[in-house]
Image 1 (cartoon, rainbow over the protein chains, first blue to last red):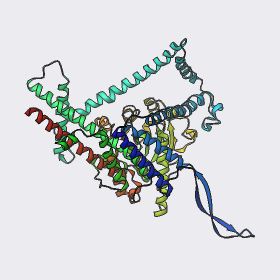
Image 2: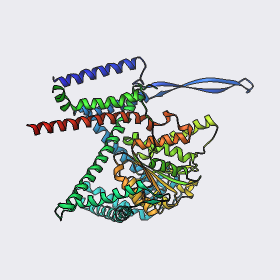
Image 3: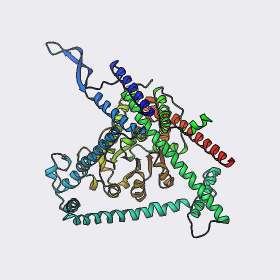
Image 4: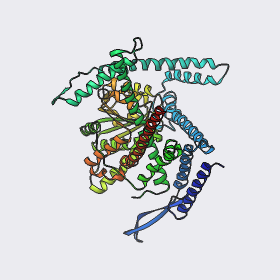
Amino acid sequence: MSRGRIVFLVAGGLFLAFLLFRSATGGMVPPWPHTVETQAMEPQYNEFGLLVGENAVTTGATSWKGPLTWFAAFLTLCILSFLYDDNPLYKFAEHLFVGVSAAYWMVMGFWTTLVPNLFGKLTPNLVSGVLEGVKDNTPEWHYVIPLIFGILLLTRISEKFGYLSRLSLAFIVGTTAGLNFVQYLKSDFMLQITQTITPLVAIGAEGFSFWGTFSNIVLFVGVICGLIYFFFSKEHTGVFGAASRIGIWVLMISFGASFGFTVMGRIALLVGRMEFLLRDWMNLVVG
Amino acid sequence: MAFYDKIRNIDRRVIFLLIGLSVALPLIFTIRFPEFPTPMVKQIFGLMEDLPPGAKVLVSFDYDPASEPELQPMATAWMRQLAEKRAKIYIMALWPIGQDMARLSIDALKRDLADKERETGEKVPFEYGVNYVNLGFKSGAQGVINVVLTDFEKMYPTDAAGQALSTIPLMKEARSLKDFDLIVNISAGTPGLKEWIQFGADPAGVRIVGGSTAVQAPLLYPYYPKQLYGLLGGLKPAAEYEKLMGDRYPQYADIQKNKGRIRMGAQAVAHLVIMAFIIIGNITFFIDRRRERSR
């Protein structure tokens, strides 16, 4: 056995021992269902029905928070174990996550879109049992068209009739492309160009703005030099080459900023998981 | 030289362990740093503060639990502020679990408002159908935005609970996206803020502010300031926003109610460790290069 594996096993054993010790001493949420007691004040009446005071009544209910928290912590540790090496526990957690996510998407898609927006329009009375809001609606029969298109999509699973799904796919691709083309052209192309065309000297309500002017000059030089770097029809020499090199710097700075943001985001996610493990599961947070 | 070689060939698992400790220890010992809000965060806060009572605000929750650590703090802060400003809140989601994330925010806000009423005696109205409505999730990404641009009822025959839209008082005032005073989007990817700008805010001519994950933020900054009024990109601006909220509304100043600020302590220490490793990596790079040249 390699030294690294021995270290991993020893560390894992110590961690398990720590967990056992803490759960045995009541420091953590128990891994089994437990009774949660709640106290409420109930009015007390005498034999004539007159209110004479209040009684503290304790009621108990079974809570599944413990086992669920332990299972969530187990899955989190399974995922984090990938940092050491690829292993079956990681694969188990990954597959479970993907499966549950896909199932959740499907169920949500069915109950929040298909039921109200399709069946609710076609046969309101049929779904009014589960969706009271559509009870008095009159059927809108033109929704048969999307229903047919939807059924055609499912023909993909058949070898014989699979080609029929192309009709629906063509409609989806065409609509999406048409929709996106117009809005991308307007929002991402025209408006972005308009935003880039700013006066070099910034004069605001309070007069000349030094930082505004500096920002506009950086934007102008950055955009021009960045574009020059991607202009390959002319050799990058002389003034053109210098501008191209500035363009590389602009790109590098923007990539660096993106990398910094990515690191920040990933660490934030780690903080979230750690918070769950340390606060909700192990109850280790001081203060 | 032996020490130099050890540092140069450091095992990645040692780095993971140090990063893990740099996150865990500040969380355990509750290490926190002061927050200094940046101009963009102040600008978004100011815009929200200037909303008149009864302003109609659409809040779209387009994220899932994977991005909760970054996005839930800003979502909660915005919901608190909108409720305090007596805005009319319309909630929807383009991500399936967004609907549940919205429910988390609503529940947290209800607890906050109950606490406030208990402590100060002041009651902030937050009644379903009158002050807020949860329309829930619809699949279709930008297609959904495209439909609600002209008619909400076409896409949402009912709200998230199955109640007919026509019976909800709040929906009588907002038939389409164009009727809103502000769009607030909290997103972790696609469909998200970009789609809301392209298919919602731009064609409707409604102001939009957004919150996004840090990973997404660089892709969204080009829309600022003309197409996007402001952006909270990641945990840091969320914590800054919480600081502003705490200053303006003292009942939210308690650090335990500000997840973003709690998490920023660990985030800051982890960043310092990463920066130390980047510096070590660069030093070893230059030492290696000098050695190669001298050979």
